[in-house]
Image (cartoon, rainbow, N blue to C red):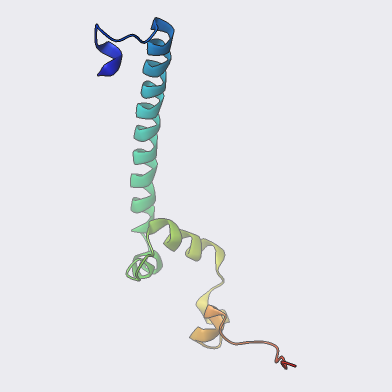
Length: 94
């Protein structure tokens, strides 16, 4: 590593700060990996989130967000109402 090379002209304080920053990056990486693993576990627990993840570009986070923030599908008359493709107003272009 460049920080540990004997011929390096980096001042000691810079080396120390770089080591601290690298340690922080390592700690954050472990925390992110732990949370990512937990999110995947939670997303695998329900049928809805598992099914949502079969769609392209829908991963555990999106699947959990959809499940958490959307009303029950039974409250929609048809699928396109859920998708928002049924306009509620008619507009005339002039």
